[in-house]
Length: 292
Image 1 (tube, rainbow, N blue to C red):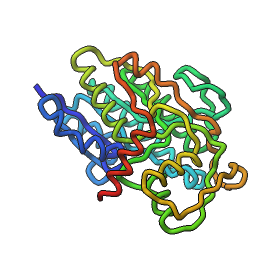
Image 2: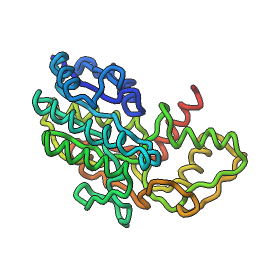
Image 3: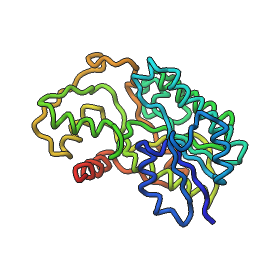
């Protein structure tokens, strides 16, 4: 018998990637893809009604306010989506016995570490975006402890607006580019995260729902400057000179974590998944972008 999965924020990068692979799982799961037009997650009664009406078993919450700099001036809306809506989902899920997988971020850390963050490391967000995401995590675990939180970082895909697509566009438009080289992390192809989420759901059906916080990004470590060089190489861009700069030389409203490499040992061990290297996943994405 099929289980029913609600995907919120389905028009974003991650939701779109889950939609792409949904047919591979149609014997096990029935998918309900919603964005704000179909379901307003800032209204708890709307979520509650939707869960009841469609007999939902799992929610994968991909909805988020992710405009990091804009959030500094638009904190009310940021908190409404990243904290209050998550609390609404949690309340509706708890009262309807629905399990939740929620996507969070490396921005919950302050970025002062020198080794990859594990899930139990101290959180200390430095931006409105990071604080709103952490408060969303806290609300979810308080109201609906039977939840999985996946913290990810540097997300990109063939969908929506993201760093990879921006660097390809700018690389074609400009002769020179300055890119920050002193922020260290690991990019994440949303297609890989979507695949992992589905593996977790399959695992949950045949084993048990292993609630808790997990980290996921592609394997390896880089910085934005080297990431850009790799993007341009894969895209065959040779006419744009990319120069490294420091964070201080690129003023931004919101503070970014200087170091946000995530340790993925827990998610790999719990669900038996392997994670591709960031270089390989980038290459796949860029090749697809070039063919569109």
